[in-house]
Each structure stands twice: as C-alpha cells, then as structure tokens.
Amino acid sequence: MIEICYRPIGVIHSPFREIAKVPGLPITAKGVEAQIELKARFQEGLQDLEAFSHLILIYHFHLAEGKKLLIRSLWDDDEHGIFASRSTLRPNPIGISVVQLVGVEENLIFIRDCDIADGTPLLDIKPYLTEYDAHATRSQGWLKDFQKKAMKKKKN
Image 1 (cartoon, helix red, strand yellow):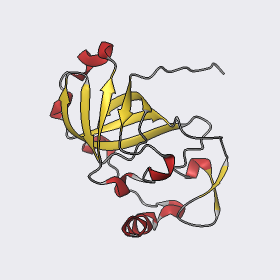
Image 2 (cartoon, one colour):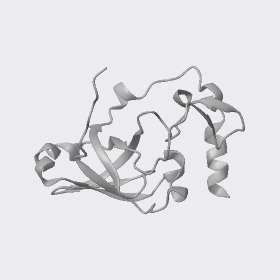
Image 3 (cartoon, rainbow, N blue to C red):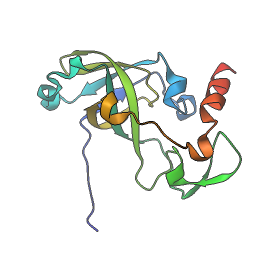
Image 4 (tube, rainbow, N blue to C red):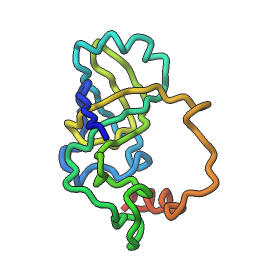
C-alpha cells in the first residue's frame, strides 16, 4: 500500500489546553466556542461557507499517545475494538466533529459546540448537510446508552 501524507490547512484554537479537559463527545461540548485559523493561502476556499449552519471538521489527534486495537471506554468496563469506538488511539489518529458555524472573518472561522483540543491541526472542512449526513440508525451497538451516561457525567 502507498503511504498517504496530509498537510494541515489550519489550526483549531479551543479552551481545552489539556487532553484531560477535552470533552469525550460533542454532546458534552454544547455551547463551547472556538476558532479555526485557516492558513491564508486557503482563505479563498471559504467563499459561501457562511451560508451553512454546521460544519464537519476533519482533524489530526495530535495529542493521542499510542495506538491500540482494543480499548476500554469511559462508558463501560469491557474491551471493545478500536473501530467500534470513538477513541483517539487509532492506527490513523483522525478525528471528525460536527460543529455549529458562528461566523467567518477573513481566514478565521468561529465555531460553537467544539469538542477538540487547542492547537489541533485541521485537515479539512466540509459543510454538514442534514439530508445527506444525518441517518436514522437501527443500532448504536454497545454504545446504546452512551448519550445518557455522557450527559450524566457532564452534570457531575
């Protein structure tokens, strides 16, 4: 197989300067404001972005230490395969988050509902389209109760 190499298009600035402070899931980051500093040479690519309410951010988990194929989740004590989890300890430490777009000023993008560590290298931005990106699911697998547990953990 060929090696694939990506270069960041910008950096995400958030209030989470320590990995332990980063919310485990977007639902626990409601209202958290952050900003993306896009490299100036990509600014032209922001044209028409403000028309969208939400964005999909694809980024590199730069603080992830190591890789695992089996992990223990915050939500239960059993081991699960890395591909059946949202863990950062992936063979390719790539993260994806849906955030709310607040505004764009030159090469700065202001976002809300950010669950991403400060200084995270941004690889790509895509508009979130409800008609194409939201799907009714039949099963949440072993994570079926994760939302309830995540909200309970946030309140504690």
